[in-house]
Length: 190
Image (tube, rainbow, N blue to C red):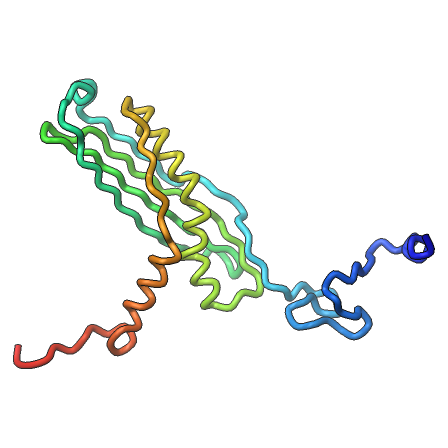
C-alpha cells in the first residue's frame, strides 16, 4: 500500500521489468534517457490486394472435362521503398490450371503489405522484407487464391505452406558461392 501512495501522482512509472536502474541510464537497445525511441521496431502497417485477375476462359465446358488439370504455381517477392521507414512488400502469385482440352483457369494475385521499420540495420531489414514479411502475408494471399478458384466454379485450391526463410537462406548461399555472387569461371578450354 505504501508503494501505491508513492506512485499515486505518477503518470509514468518505471515497472522495473528490464532489471535496470532507471537512474543509472538506459541499457543498450532501450529508449534513450532523453525519451527518444531508439529501440528497434518492425510492424505491419497495412495489407491489401494490389491486383487480382481471374480468368475462366473455357467455362462452362471446362466443368465437364474428365482429365484433371495440371496446376502450375509461380511466386515472386518484390519490395519498393516508400519512405525511410516504410517498405511495400509484394507477394505475387500466378496460378494456372491446364488440361488437354485447354486452360481451365488462371489466377494472378499481387498481395501487398506496408511494413514499418525503425532503428533496424540493413541486413536485418533485407531479411525481414524477403523472408518474414512474405511469411506473414502468405496465409492471407492463400485464402484469396482459394476463394478466387472456388468463385470461378472449381474446388478451392489450398496452396501448401512455403518456407520463405529457407528459400531466402538458399538464395543468399547461392549468391555467396564462387567470387561472392560472380558466376563460376569455367575450367579448361571452351
